Image (cartoon, rainbow, N blue to C red; front, side, top):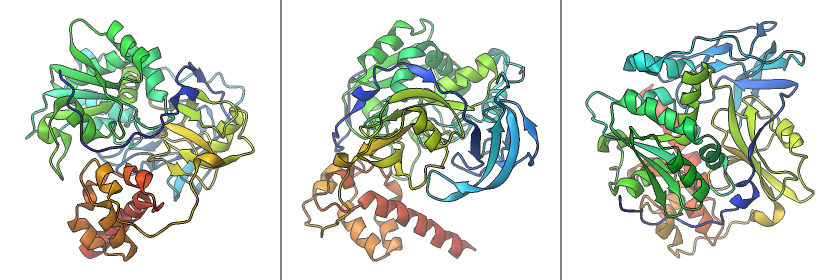
Length: 442
């Protein structure tokens, strides 16, 4: 297959050498875990425990509220000590369950029936994935089972596996492919079976040659799986950009990947699905890259979901004297944290601690209409004009200029010489527009 690529995009410094060669290690359990019931796209889980309850590792503490929802499970054995509103990584407050970890427990999950996926119907596989609480581990946390059940009026012919990991600093997907390639392929096999597709393509950027080699070495001989090296460019890991790079086909504005016969899944999600059908264990921990020039000891860690940021950073020997900002996710699309009590959730790909020399000042200058943001935008929007509309709160006009197509990749903000926080303006505008539409519908 030829490399098609996509237009525009940017080339920020990669900064992956801090952790790309570090093997994955397991973090010890902290004294307390805080598990928000809202950890995924769709409806939050509904509470199913109360204060004083004893829970084992893997027990549900929140149940799925409908099809577009997944359950939340205890990531360690312990006692429910509180149920309250707690700082969420997105900057809001969310209902959360506090678990005091039993320091003497062996932390072995309850014995679970491991389903034989080969004998299950498609609906049963989808239900098993939902019951395990698996979501997209690339950052968006879209429920994985929903993608495994595309609408009947669409025909899916290809599974595209996202191993691009184009965000600077982050290496959790990279290390997953290097250390657990068999698990990635097993997850791929299950998803191909469930979707009824005969072909899969794993797209990996060329700055991960060891990952490409590991996947090629372990590729099943009975499946049509192509390991496709991709030219390094941001935001190639975005779903629509990856599809264009792999297939040369552009997903139309306002449409989903299934409209062009494709489903995209992250390599971490494949590995998580493989673990469900290998061990029966739900999604209660994930691989997190903890890195940055403001951190004393960068690492790739298996972290229990619900671990507070302060405990995670302490385990990595703390931050340096010139640390200026802590970000959940990567520096391009991640969220700066004002409270280190916020926990790691299912969609937390990494925690990046930036030093002062890596951050910009807060001064914003007038737009000079240089056009750099237009050249950077991978979906061909006019960020300069949208930014002007955002500042005067003309949200309906922004919708007419395709605000919904903006994926908040941050390319426009990155190239702006006037330091205008365009991506942040668009994110806030999406929220305000959604609220206005909900108020109008009511």
